[in-house]
Length: 262
Ligand code: B12
Image (cartoon, rainbow, N blue to C red):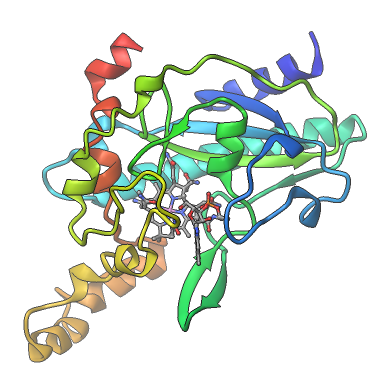
């Protein structure tokens, strides 16, 4: 078995659903440009992992609590698989760097606005490794699970053959369900717009559950057991946070029917 097949097998045995590999020079950089060499000197290959999300968790009528937990579990799966692959490759003499799947990120200021910017784009790495395409929802859409995936990627100095596959054009049909579902109209319907996502608007939905119609109600919620106080405790104990995932949830490609059809 070659190194590529060994890496894929290690990841799949640790709850990873899709694995792809690409040469770092084949990754299209977005803004700000984050080249692989800045993270690992001599990086040659990126290995990308995708962990699928439960449809039922994202579509729970009681909101995103279950989906947040499911995402945390997906991050654990991604990190453990990455660490296992990294240990294996380093035992063969190749250096590895596993990029955080989510936080921590940098904050950069542009035109007076603060933006989150990670040190590396998992999405662009996944596209180069042919795991999927970027949809109108600005997310990676895979043939197997639509956008219902969390992804991560690692860099290695090992030169490993890339994965290639044909992806059908209709992974995103530009049906605009995601654009229309966004509660703050953060997604630009123009597929060529840069950036496609209005990040400050999207981020604002993260604090929405804490905002009440009047200042008094909001202040009260901060200090009561029903409000931010209780949420704060859960956040500290669990790392629990709120997030909107409507652009991911409504994509027809993520439905169980689409998954069965492949
Ligand atoms: C910070 C962050 C956010 C921020 C900002 C997102 C943004 N696009 O700017 C907020 C909190 C708003 C956010 C929201 C969401 N996120 Co988010 N996020 C990240 C994180 C941690 C870093 C993104 C980043 O900075 N990458 C570095 C840049 C260089 O690469 P890029 O993201 O591919 O490129 C973007 C920039 O170049 C930007 N851009 C283009 N021009 C310009 C100009 C300026 C000035 C700036 C600042 C940016 C910019 O546009 C590109 C596409 O968005 C990534 C994980 C990761 N490391 O990639 C997850 C990640 C992208 N998020 C993810 C998800 C699921 C979500 C949400 C659905 C929320 C949720 N429930 O988790 C929404 C979806 C929003 C959307 N439709 O895009 C998943 C996507 C999975 C998938 N299938 O594609 C990721 C990959 C996490 C993961 N490990 O799975 N996210």
